[in-house]
Length: 148
Image 1: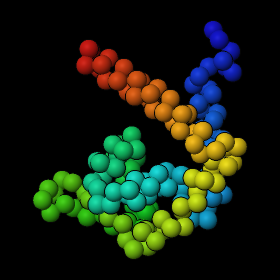
Image 2: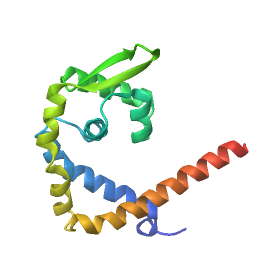
Image 3: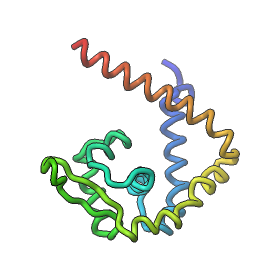
Image 4: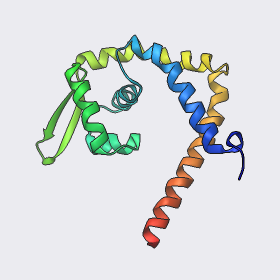
């Protein structure tokens, strides 16, 4: 069996751990956790989504999202309301406070890129490769589930 340091999964895991640590002081200034920040980024890109749509973008299920969204609502950043066209769906809309927070968060990606010691443009290739790996894994999982 290959050693731990030779495992891709450990390289990804330990890098993600280091990235999360780098985000903590930046997000503390915004009073957000990393998962909350990701949810807000999605809503800043496309406001007025359903919980299901947000979950699809973040690869999270509603059971994981519900407490996160309750906290964002308590913080006054989002409003959750039943969709009048489909009561089964819960829609998410940014409040003015949530929209304003975007301005305060705009410097975070560049600060993280600087902490990584790599220009933002260099990270595009890394992102592209990680997306390819993620998509291949999701596709592999989906095809193995349909084969069962």
